[in-house]
Length: 165
Image (tube, rainbow, N blue to C red; front, side, top):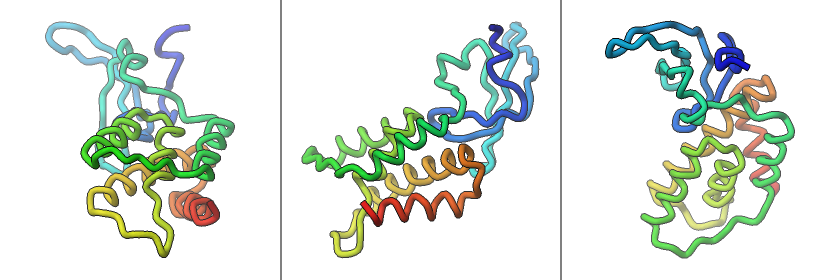
């Protein structure tokens, strides 16, 4: 199977550090005297375009959207008990960022679950809130793309699951 056949223009993909994007084309460019074929990926929410060499797509972690089964597994993670980590906040923040940037929906769901606060629970610090919102946004975008629903409906679905947990 050729590298190009793995993804094609119009496919939604997940790039670990940026989340869900859409391949808008495949182009050739000369960079430092080498001809490279590149996937051109557009990330609407960040208003950003990323060019990933086709040869480096696998190594960079570029992947297809999760299947419905994978997404259900991630969502079932939200229903689990949050893990209380007693490590210093700086260490936990690094672990949470690594999970978010892994692009793995289950890892991202763990961050959402662990940082979610219901009414009556202590407030989050600013940095906890930022990490929580970043993880939630990543999960919402992939859920919306997988389920072919808008981000508002995906957000509502996740928040309902979190309230019920």
